[in-house]
Image 1: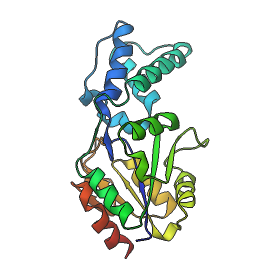
Image 2: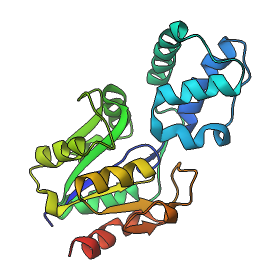
Image 3: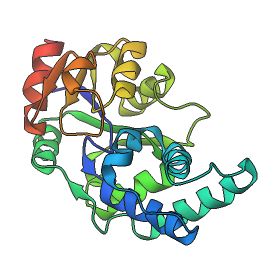
Image 4: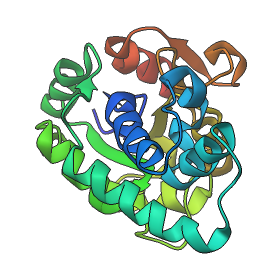
Length: 221
């Protein structure tokens, strides 16, 4: 199997919401605000830490002056980095499916808008990094998903070609990335998107990560 599988991270491979929420609430409580729950911000998990922080501040009081946001963002990232895998869990079927794909010669990469240093640390902490020959997070380039260039960078690093590459994610951002890159996309239903997964425009939708190899074969021929 020479297919290049390009995976989103948060909401696709790993349920990171508990640790993201923990870091966010640590900052909110310190600032004298109420804690939020995952239903408040689940739809923002895939849009980056800054978007989560900005929205949480709006939900819990007056928006902060822009002059304070960078310091709070830095504190949030530091807290999250120190607690990055305390409650985060690999979604069912992920480890087994990645091992199967790797054993069959597939090329595996991660493309996430999570900062590069955090993506690297999380995947290492959960013993998933060994399956990937390319891990691309935010900050590696001056552009992020859904810019097609980041998808092409991962494919190139894997030694693949665009015609044998596929995106697997949970959000409209992942679908838009695939569309921009001219690649098919599989959408998993258990992620963080507020819209029903079947309405995101994916080429295939699945409740089970273990279906990915079969669906990819169907889509790529």
